[in-house]
Length: 402
Image 1 (spheres, helix red, strand yellow):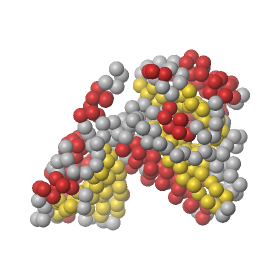
Image 2 (tube, helix red, strand yellow; image 1 turned 30 degrees about the horizontal axis):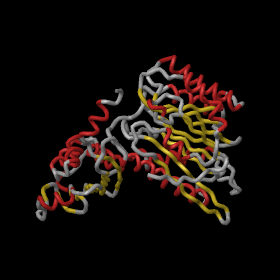
Image 3 (cartoon, helix red, strand yellow; image 1 turned 90 degrees about the horizontal axis):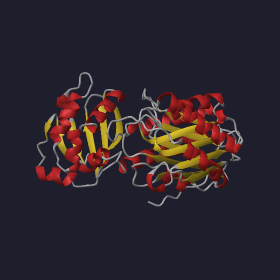
Image 4 (tube, helix red, strand yellow; image 1 turned 90 degrees about the vertical axis):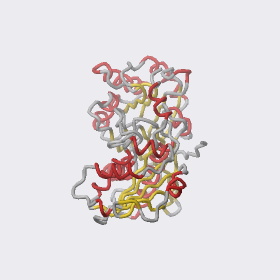
């Protein structure tokens, strides 16, 4: 897929091949930021979080959320490496800072790839001087490719925002195809805007957008050790600073940010390892949002549901079983109805009187599947996105380190 990503004033990127991946594929990204750029970020809640996550959290606080550079590598997660992994992540920040004449604490580090392998820091060190000479504002497309691991395509989206005569931009890239059930972030995502936004507002909006996008996807139920999502506001736009989250300008920005995040999140699911179908699970008439989410993710994490969808088998009994074992209180199963691609399958907790097997087969014979569940217990609703489970998913992950 050819990406049409717009440059963000005040943010330059460079891409290189350090040799971390096999076959000298692009595996290193340097992002350079103008002074005063604000950064909001969310990171994995996995207790075995990777060394670059620990370093980036610490550095972000030390630089008062005004970093000057990111160094990102793919092909090696630098996770599960103990103290040496932490020292290696710090070293990456040090050499990047030295190449740009910044302070070490002004550099954030990000890694993705195989867990438990030592990070080849010397390969990154030897690539930095060349990377600095390649920094350009229009390198987003190349950066989206360089952060890929088992992805089959680069993921990125841009949106233009107009405030009067002033044009502003939001551009974001992300990677991920497996080990995806984000918990506070996504696998890796980087989003930039040329607007000037206070850190408090930026962080608030990022957390809101992540909750409505990356927190609404799952491929295999596994939360990565390296999850990180960073939102950068360079302030290069002449639009006055946005420091009130309730202002009209703030709401316009947030609407565009949320859409970019949703587009990125859905693109991860569409490129899921071995996936053949994109599945939307919509839960309606719930007693609470938490009830809706619990049931949605229970369906999405069911191997039996996912394999039936892969086979285009309308085995709606597996949906009932998943709903019934979800960790929710006082669900009245006699009020549950289910539609698959608008075809009524279950009504009042049992097979719908109008349902015929050929109807279900026809509904499942699509690349995009919508499962809509009505709980009949309230007014809350939610939507999440997932993929099917195919032979290729097993093959890809069985051979991941070979």
